[in-house]
Image (cartoon, rainbow, N blue to C red):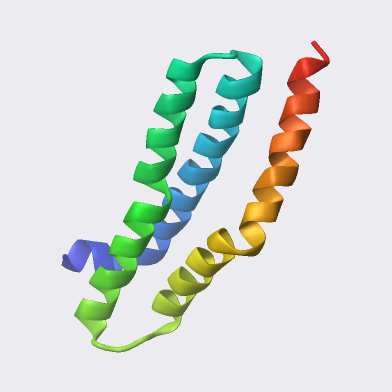
Length: 104
């Protein structure tokens, strides 16, 4: 657990990059490949790199530090963003991907 707490920012940024990569792959699988199999794979990848590990990192950090610090606050803000404003951004991204891949 010490490793996770010591490297929490690097892990968080890496997970965020992987989550957005999974999102783009999910859109490509849906509209570019038109494959339900790869879309499901991308959805699982998103869950494994996005919400689940970020929540776990926030919990681990809170348990280790026993306080709400900047890292925990950032995790909470990322989750709130994902469930509020982020939904609209993903819908816009989805429409963009649909237009981009249907033009081919």
